[in-house]
Length: 313
Image (cartoon, rainbow, N blue to C red; front, side, top):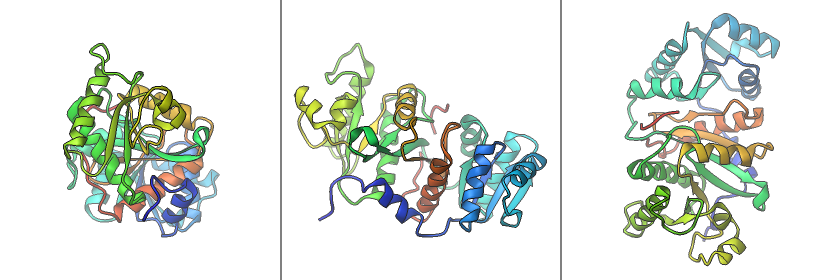
């Protein structure tokens, strides 16, 4: 019988990096940080395609002493062209997943979703995998911190679906999902609590698949058993959530930055655009960027790449 929850973060990374990276395309790696991650995976044997400003990329590669024989640069004059070239590489099979370089998230995902790659569906969403040092080093998923601005109930259900797809690749245990809110009671004054209650009912009726869902639930009650007891919350999810569903992008993004802002181990990916998209934020460490490469690569080799397009950042 499998241990409940997600494996330790280090174990996940060891599993992800046990296989070579699938072929990928990095869109607009025009920053030192983006090229540092490229340099890391190239040193580990990856072969990459890069789209963007050729001269700028070549200068950054030279400064980072990257083996240029391991990369192909596709000169692209602007963001739209860089995304279009990446899509061409996906369509021809020359790349299997996409990595965000320095391009704004909205430009990257907007371009990918407009192209309607095979496999995309109703809603793309971002999922962080992170180790929470503040909560005993547990590994959790946090969604959506990067794509859907103010998701409605249907969008939240699709976000849950994407998170469950990723979870199933990392663990065979039954997932426990907390629908986060500032309070644990349903209130018409806080619409997110109404959605949380609806999602809980949907899960109870089997509409969300094999998952235990509870909410509305404050963050501390989702992660600390003592806090759950103090708030009179019981059940499978309270105090031991594996997946955290934020009520909106603003709160999800703030929470993600608070949790990984001190360089806690993390990685992020978008499911729903037709292919996995490694989506580091501008402030992410090189390690987080590297981990995100390997997570997206692993997802290309699994059945868990079902997508879903809604609001975008």
